[in-house]
Length: 202
Image: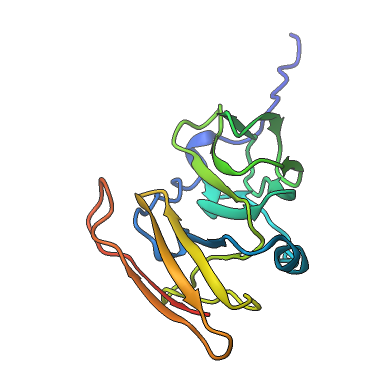
């Protein structure tokens, strides 16, 4: 009798349930400022933190990653199964292929816009890369607070994007000294109950 070769040990049923997608989280918002003069904008370094969208719990974590044009995002796989990350968005098309736990792939985002990310193995997996044209960007914390520092005085456009809400924009006047405080409120997200709020302190 020929030996039976089992390519993948274990059972898929033994894996934990996928992390559920929660809609309307304030931490999924992306905030940025447009209209900053080019010399001042070039002096504002993009956030140096390593950007990643992990494949974890059979989902993309975090659901939303904010990047400035020219930044790279890592896609590490932390699950004990194969995953894939791909996008057919016009802003950035890519397919990273299937790879196991412990491996990662990188993607450079060089055009502003919205990039939806999926896994061709697990239909429930979906994430967003929001590429913004300005280094003056941030994401709120769990309390809805955020800050954008070193913005020169002047009149600009503040934009807020969230996958579950319409995009917002507001004209703001940054003073020569002191802080500008802004409150942005959202109603219930599309397709899910609840309220998300964003508060801003520059």
